[in-house]
View (cartoon, rainbow, N blue to C red):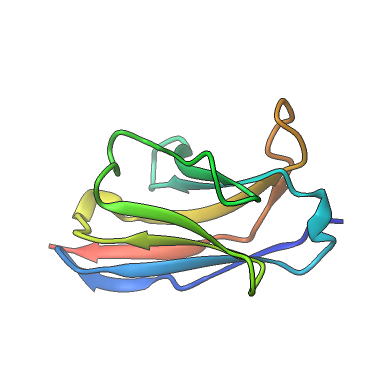
Length: 119
């Protein structure tokens, strides 16, 4: 069973940086890819970035390209999201999610971590 746990959220001023991490405490061999999503108050959940568990095939939402970087740490079995040049509109609860195949849905979700960017 895949069990995902996020960490690293917090409060930061606009222009600052935060690094989120997603760890799988379950059976990691089942994961095909990890995605980061976010949901702001009153808005629908949106895709932020994704990476294959092998560390390649990275994708980003247009709104975060050039500011966010997703990476895979093989030694720690984690996926990180480095967020630079943060904007108030990046404020949201950030979730990592896992899927077990190239055509499967994101079936495994973490509990979420709050990111708040003050202006």
